[in-house]
Image (cartoon, rainbow, N blue to C red; front, side, top):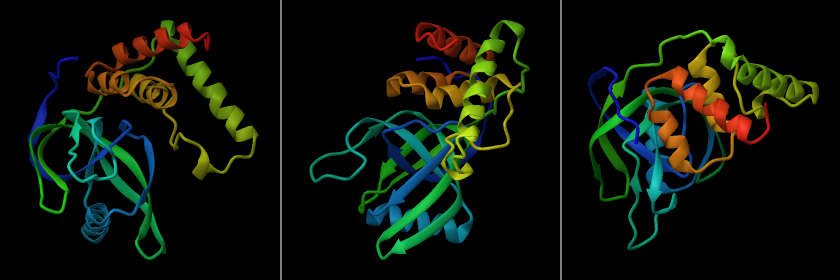
Length: 213
């Protein structure tokens, strides 16, 4: 696991949502909420204008099962709720976006199953221009976005949300990290890397291995 050496903030207390995916900063995350513990959590976040933390499951299930518990990664991403609707009673549909990364300092599961954690937010990626030797990763991503737009796919269904920062190493690396099929552990390792250039170099290797660039 890559070490986490970036500066951290004061501690925050947040609810956690363990999921079978990894949310990256500026990433899009649509959710359908039906478990009582998360319906209450999301409603409180909506009412208070607050965020929750998305962490990748390392064991257990997204849906609570009697006699089972979840374990999850130590590094996650804060999630903003951008849009929400309640099409039927007991169901919330929410559209979220990734904010800052965080590291869990301590966590505790409440009686009704919700996890609460004390977390330290990690420094955001420095804005680093994509070097010439990694420009092929940008070109491939730009071509993918162009193809999706030429197919008249609604913006809400495109997995990459604007604004597009195609000359920013961290942003490009994060979008490929979301799009490429890989194990959750690999995505988690990429999320935990503090160096956006190294993250993009690793992505370039994966794209080359898959003959995508």
